Image 1 (cartoon, rainbow, N blue to C red):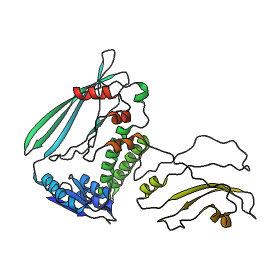
Image 2 (image 1 turned 180 degrees about the horizontal axis):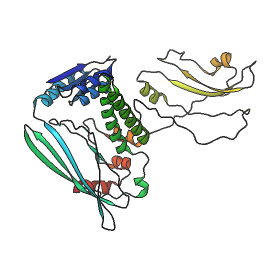
Image 3 (image 1 turned 90 degrees about the vertical axis):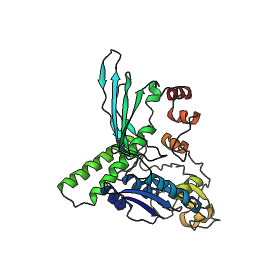
Length: 363
């Protein structure tokens, strides 16, 4: 069976829906179409991923016909099924010795490839910095019952120096880890729908542990983890002494994007408040929001005097720009899924553009 699932959002049990689709993936293939601006991308993408189908988003009514035609094309035209990937990599050392490499493929369960679509696969393996990697990947599939085979040669001809190789951002590793994490969580939700017994509880604990390990190793958020930043610097001060720390806050544009809601303007103030009648003194900070949040647009520093004492300064704090490489990599990706080979992409990977271009020509 092939099912086309349409929704305009407002689904409160997305995890249960994705788990149900994953549990019945051997009975039906599910294609999803999200309608409108408020549709959940996690639901649409998750159901399509769990159901081995495709996902389409219709933000404007004029796009509906083309989205339906692409979905019908994927559902009715021949596709590549029964995909298998056989990684045969060898690690060569300077002394001439060779050692086979064990590769962890992500995703573990490979979905079909539909016409005019592409799929991304990752291979994780450990190797010595001084060694070289050579080998090939055998890609086997079947189209309309006819078996097909493709061979891709692999060699690490792009040489990374220690500074570049030890990059802390690991954008590709995080993309692969996020893909593997989604696959594990889909399986977690499908097991939760079954009757709980000792075997299922053990499997749930195992999946959760794998997700937590991936999240901690790659510094990516998950269903079971959260990231906490700890400043290792210790201040050796008298506990009775007052310490003032100015914390820069995000700008209005970035805050509005995170909240996904319209807003007017945001002004910030950091000040020392002395409360009469209280024991000791305290440091406090205050934010004045206005616009769509419902506060007075004309609020200023003097408006706080009656509530918290005297405000000794009122100034806007410049926002701090934070841009990690994996976020930059996502920004450079086109809507159809590919990346343009240019200087921006090479800077993101910290690889010279000439080396990257030469490597792609050889492959």
